Length: 137
Image 1: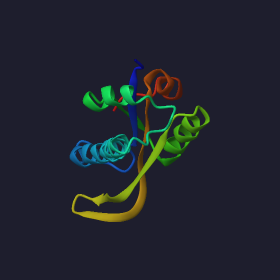
Image 2: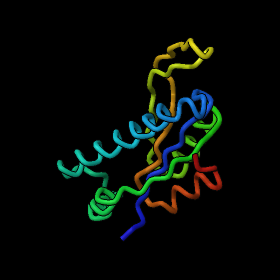
Image 3: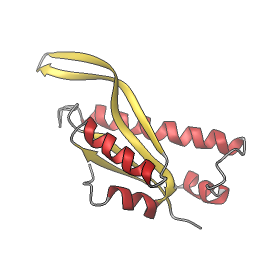
C-alpha cells in the first residue's frame, strides 16, 4: 500500500500572527475539507483517477495524513503549484475573501484572493520531492 499524504501550503503575508491564528487555521481546514469531500464523492461514485488506487484512498480517508507548510506570499504559492504540476502531483488552489488588518481597529476585504494550495492526496514521497525543506507552519 502506498504512503498517501496531502500537503497544504498557505501564504502568511495576509495574516497577522498571533491575532489571526484562528483565521489561518480555518483557511487550512477549508482547503483540506474541499479535497477530502471531493475525493469522498469520487470514491462513492467510483470515479477516482486510474492512477489513484481505491484501497490507498480508503486508507487515507480513514487516516488523512496532512502537513501544513508556509510561504511568504502568492508568488511562493504559484512557484510550488508549478513545481507540483511539473511533477504530476495534484494541485488545488484555494481562493477566498480575506480581511487584511490595516490598523488595530480597521480591516479591508479582498475578495477572491489566493490563500493556499493543496498538493495531493497522492504518494507522500512524491509530494516531498516538490516541497523539499519548505518550513512547517
